[in-house]
Amino acid sequence: MISLTPAATGKIKFMLAKRGRGVGIKIGVKTTGCSGLAYVLEYLDIVPDDQSMMVIQQDNFSLGLETRSVPYLQGLTIDWVKQGLNEGFEFINPNERDRCGCGESFRV
Image 1 (cartoon, rainbow, N blue to C red):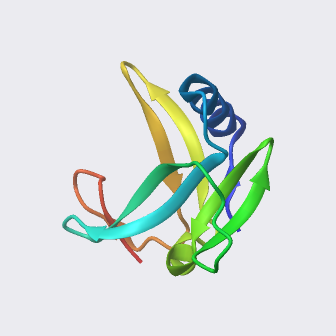
Image 2: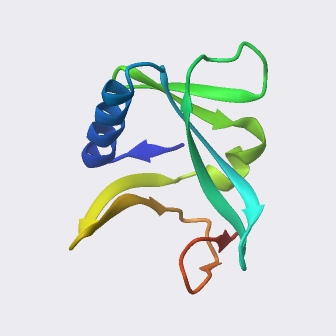
């Protein structure tokens, strides 16, 4: 369903260790930007016991997927990329039809 590159996995583990608490990260989408949708990453402090989230165990941390966002996240690959002075998560989604010019939002 969703895959993380070794670089993304390492960065998430580093961020969780530096933060000192949390069980993983939560991934979802929100309506925003010129193309309509944007990815949202947040720390996951507890795993909810309801149907609001699908949880995948990933290399000693939990990856929580908002249930309402799952259709937009099918096949998503998350990478951690450094380019010059910039670094950040890169989302490679085969369902994207296009992105806005600034790269902050997308459409499926």
